[in-house]
Image 1 (cartoon, rainbow, N blue to C red):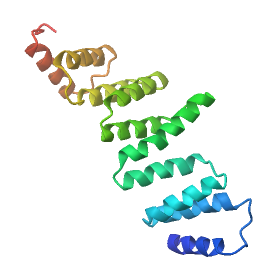
Image 2 (image 1 turned 30 degrees about the vertical axis):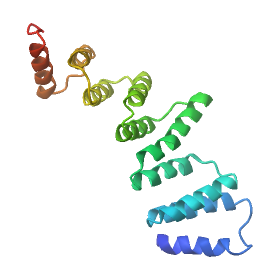
Image 3 (image 1 turned 90 degrees about the vertical axis):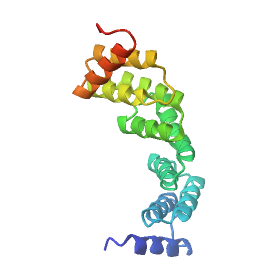
Image 4 (image 1 turned 120 degrees about the vertical axis):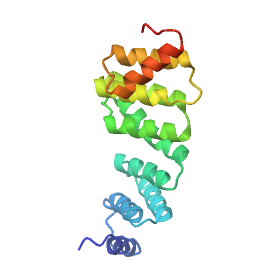
Length: 187
């Protein structure tokens, strides 16, 4: 019937019996964790996911779900290791990393204030997905880094122009104003 709470309770009741086949237990524990997450019971979700891992469940979905739980709890620093673990596993296996995973890791880096990590992730993302839109996003977001000097900002605008990622009047106006204030009015 699509009642997540009822499914969660049914799984919990099943675990109290010996009826759960050992081969299915890891995936069912993951599902119990997912349902707990969906109803907002994060403590139970973490417990179920950890139990699923001890039973041998190592799905990508469980690792991402652990990151999502930490994000919902407002703990981006605790969420980052889960996303970074997936990135490392994919790098080690030589598999292409989905763009959305980079985006999530970058977002977590911003939220936790790890500007060096954000820069490294953007470099890796741009190497894998070198589109004009991605350049603009990376440069625009980098310009918002706290404490960045005007010369570095000016260089980033120059880079944005060089790769054809100036997308709006705002980009041109900000670049021109910064260049003019720093003695590069001809630029």
